[in-house]
Amino acid sequence: MVATMPSLTSISSIVDVEIIRGSQARPEAPIDLVIEIPHGATTTTDFTSLAARLTSPLPEGLVDFFHVNTDTGAPELGLATARQLVAAEPNRSVAILRCRIPRTLIDCNRRIDAAPEDFKAGKVTPGLMPWITSPEDRVLLRAAYDRYVGAVTAATAQLAADGAMLLLHSYAPREVGVEVDLEIVRSLRAAYAPEVEPTWPLRPELDVIGKALDGTDHAPVKVVEELRRGLALLGLTVADGATYPLHPSTLAYDHVMARPGRALCVEVRRDLLADPWDPFAQMRIAPAKVERLAVPLAAALRCWWSVVS
Image 1 (cartoon, rainbow, N blue to C red):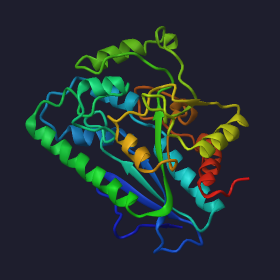
Image 2 (image 1 turned 135 degrees about the vertical axis):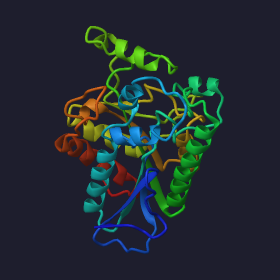
Image 3 (image 1 turned 30 degrees about the horizontal axis):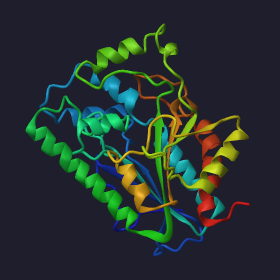
Image 4 (image 1 turned 60 degrees about the vertical axis):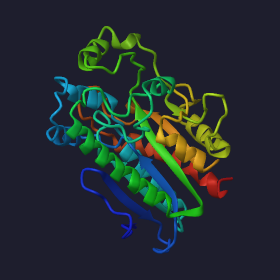
C-alpha cells in the first residue's frame, strides 16, 4: 500500500516523502492528492540537531518556542487521512510531504523575502527568525528552505489533471499575544503561567484558511460543507478564516491561487490531537483522536471527485 516514487524521495533533515496508494492504483498514474505539512518538524531532535549547526546566538530556552509553535499532530493526521482516503477510493494515490526544518529557525510556508509589514498583515510569524544573525546561518537555512520548496514543486508537478492539495496545520488551543523577538521565550513562559493561560482567547476547533484580505473566499465550497457536516456529528465546529487570512506572504497562498477550488488549507487545534496538550514538551499524539478527525476529513476531500452523496 505504501510506495516511494523514484522522483519523489525523502531528503534527510529536509522533507519526508511518503506515497500512499490504494490497492487498485497504478504505480505510474499521476498523484490525486498532495498533503503538504510545512511545519512538520515536531520532535525535539528536529530542532536541536539543526540548532547545533548554527553559529548565531540563539535565545536561551528557544526549544520552548519550538514546541509551542510547531504543528504537533499534523503529520499523524495527514497520514491517517491519506489512508482513509485510499481505503475508500482504492484507485487513488496520495503524496504526503512533511517538512523537517523547524519553523523556529526558518519557515517553509513563508515568502522569505516578504517585508515585515506583510507578515504582520497576514497575522503570521516571520520567514527567517530575528535571532538568525550569522550570514553563514542564513545561507545554510535558505539552502534547506529551497530544497524543501523544490520537493513540493516536484510533487505538485505530478498531480493529475483533477488533482488537489491539502495544506495541513495545527495550532495551539489559545491565541497567545506575544511578540516574536529576542524575548520570545520569557514572554511565552509568562503567557503560559497557570493563572494567565486561561485568559487568552480559545481558538476554533478547526479553521479553514481561505479568505483573502479583500474578503474573497478561495476555499473549496463542497469540501468545506462536507467537512463541516461531518465534524458537526462529532460536536465540533469549523470556522471560516477566524484566525488569520490567506495572505500572499505565505506559500499556501500560491498553492491555493494556482489551483482554484482544489486546495484546502486548514488549521486543527492541537488539543484535539495531543494526549495531553503541553506547550513546552514534545507531545504524545493519541491515535484515537487522530482517527476521529481523519474519517470526516477524508470524506470531505472525496468531494473533489464527486463520490460523496
